[in-house]
Amino acid sequence: MGGAADSDIIGVMPNDVPVPANLRDLNVRTAWNDAGGAARARELFTTSFGGVPEGVWAAPGRVNIVGEHTDYNGGLALPIALPHRTFVAVSPRTDRVLRLVSSVADGVVEVDLDAVGPAGTPAEVRGWPSYVAGVGWALEQAGLASALPGLDVAVVSCVPTGSGLSSSAALECSVAVAWDELAGLGLAGPAAAPSDPGRSRLVEACVRAENDIAGAPTGGMDQAASLRARAGHALLLDCRDGGAEHVPFDLAASGLELLVIDTRAEHSHAGGEYGQRRATCEAAVRLLAVPDLRAVADATRAGQTSLEEVLPRLADDEQRRRVRHVVTEIDRVRALVHLLRDESDDRLRGRSLDEAGRLLNASHDSLREDYEVSSPELDLAVEIARRTGAHGARMTGGGFGGSAIALVDDDAVEAVIRAVDDAFDGAGLRAPGFLRAVASPPAGRVG
Image 1: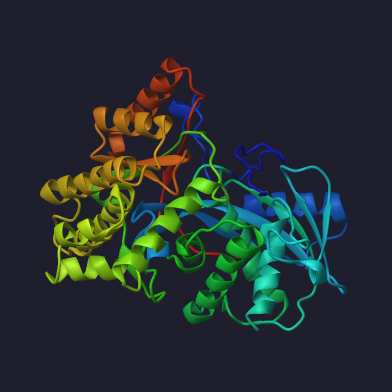
Image 2: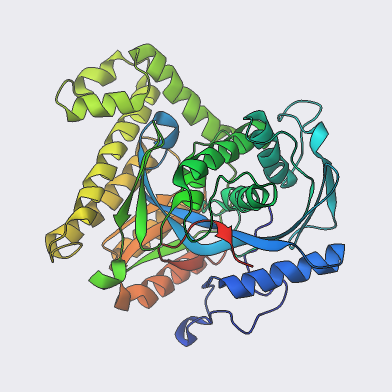
């Protein structure tokens, strides 16, 4: 899908952020800065197509702090945009052809925009190009554009693929802001003053691209984080109505870091397990005669009902466990946001920090036991991080592989990294990767 796990696929740029000397023997993935990423994208464009691109746009991957599998249930989620981004060098064409090249795929792929159709139909687009073509298809289907121009697109990325960090959404959103500017749609707004209402429309188009054209039944949290995040803040996303609030998320002020542990156990949202979880929730909604599982969470929070009253009404134990996870996970989002909003000097210190860690731990335990989307690699990463001093740790993303996060004191990061790496080696697993997550800006033009 155009993502690159390593920074040397197209050569190391002189302005790249170096890996700290004490961690160079480990797989620590630093983000490219905008200049370095744009230079890589331009180089690939010129090598593949000749000439100079019209511009370079970028969109971040995301990591979800808490609120997993709540997005397609009308719930709440709390992601941040990562500093790790996908960069696309783009020029418009005079026809309706997409010519696409990625630094991690062979050759140039051509797609006719007039022949794009949903997954499972004769007009489906296979593989990573579906995430690009799907954006154009969705923009036109929504009436946001009548006839988009074709594009030449060169894709490079430092968002790890298959890691639960939304490499697919980063690709979709980088292309969306490029098409928006080149076709004069005016939805994203200028980089200095992005339009959130317009970006919400782009989010909808990117979600439809992923659902209908790529065939991945995901919710909209990934694309919202990539397009609507703000540096230094987490995005409190209401997945029912699309509302968003930017919540301060400055861990450094409390002497903390959010460490991402990429287990390198690959997963795919297009797989059947993710869709089965969504179908089970939808069946429970029909049985309970509610608009979504958010309604159950709201009713229990208001004291109008309780899980003890709701769960026996469901068809079987599987439905009961899935619903229990979603309802309690929505409550965990609310509780963590309350801690982050605290303007006192106790924000994420002392008891507040203990509570934040407890919420992360409870989220992972619920995802493992009630939603059953964890994996041995994720459980090992979480266990070792907790044992080595993390205040809290959990899997993040859709599950079945991917990444975990750990809330760690800044002076304990190296110890946690080395302990997890040693544990994976001792278990005969692939060496994990590590990212140090900082709440970063949204998609936009970078060159």
